[in-house]
Length: 212
View 1 (tube, helix red, strand yellow):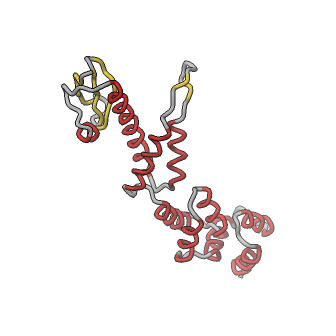
View 2 (cartoon, one colour):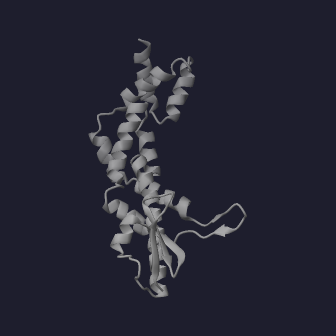
View 3 (cartoon, rainbow, N blue to C red):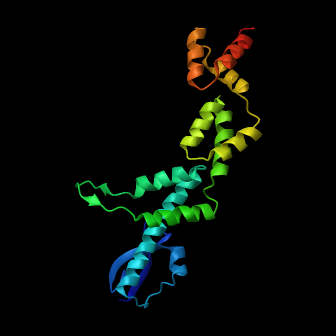
């Protein structure tokens, strides 16, 4: 089996269409073409062509995952969940099952993203702590719960909260300022703040300061 054509895609200049024996067979990322040594005239056995098709899938999944990671920092669990959603078997518009991507490919993608430092639970958690504290008030309890739900190890969470300059008392004041007009009844405001994970004693103290 011979490579008979190597041409850039019209819609995506970063991908190359590969034809085998005069027929389109698969596409590759432009960097993959070089790393795999793909050239017109190269001859392969069917098993080797299948291996190249696997590399084609890997390149597509990696690029999609990379775009996702560059939107904002993500935890390893977030990336894993994202890839699961995007690569599992699904039904097309005609009701037919479209095969998913082999798990081994998604594992390779995640390992490369980690190796290239596009995914890092510590950096993600630091971003999350800083971002949540800046945008709106949040209790330590809720912050920990969010990070745990994102798959971040408790040792990382403890370390970041320990060095953070945030405090529940300051976070409480942020929320009270924002919610005071909505909750004119202190009991309703207390109930709301308790649902946000703040301790009752801290809430009462913060409200006593606010009323002074």
